[in-house]
Image (cartoon, rainbow, N blue to C red):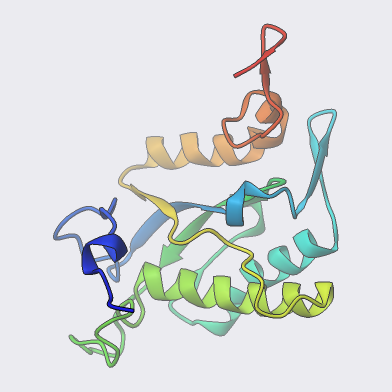
Length: 184
């Protein structure tokens, strides 16, 4: 079967020319594969994570422990039934001084993409062991990101993260959301 390169290309949502390995704060959203509600449930505006959600939370927090140039804080992270929101802080992001990547097809070392790829791979491995479902996708391809450029934006995003479970009823990621008694 011949490869059809145009079928494998996706439009990038990344900021063209921006170095995602540079120091800074990045707000990210990562969705589960097919938006499946794998991570727990929201009850009365409060998120209750299940075992899969606990694995994801532990892997997220390990990200900052395993990588000295990364900081993630529990109060800047929320697990929702089918996605997560968090702030990733890159500190001295390209400490190695490497200008190139050993794997030109993958994300540049120490970049936001490399960090999130590591998180997704580790959490998928542990989730699939727990579910006894090797090779099953857990996460959607890619992720959404927003470069946090000032303190006002940082405060707004922190508030959004904390309040996210309360807004689940109206969240566009909620597969059963309703509006005026009807499905969206």
